[in-house]
Image (cartoon, rainbow, N blue to C red; front, side, top):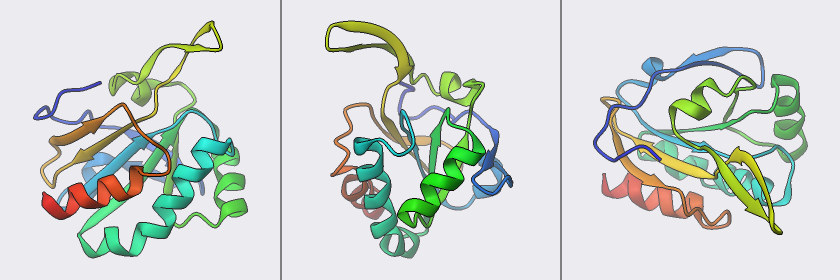
Length: 153
């Protein structure tokens, strides 16, 4: 996980519509950047739907939400359509951004060790500096936690 106070690594990734987004284009806004393992899995769906529900309050605070996983643009499109997600999902199949943000780690699941995305959420300020980082994310609470952080920042 990257340290609070460090400059957030820049990126250029396609969203669920094939539109390219860069971190620089969000200068002047707070960015909730969350990394998740896989589209349409129970925990990831709960987290994404929670962000979608909180989006009006997040936007009121001058922030945007960007979700990143290694799933494809097409997978993101299906995920967004199926659950009516109203925010940007970014595809990072080569894991360049996932690795730059230090969320590709060894994981243990039922005793099996594998590499994967560790669910992590960053809050990036208007100047592109990480002001909050959480790698102990509870899917049902993440949106509320980050909304509170945006309100206090």
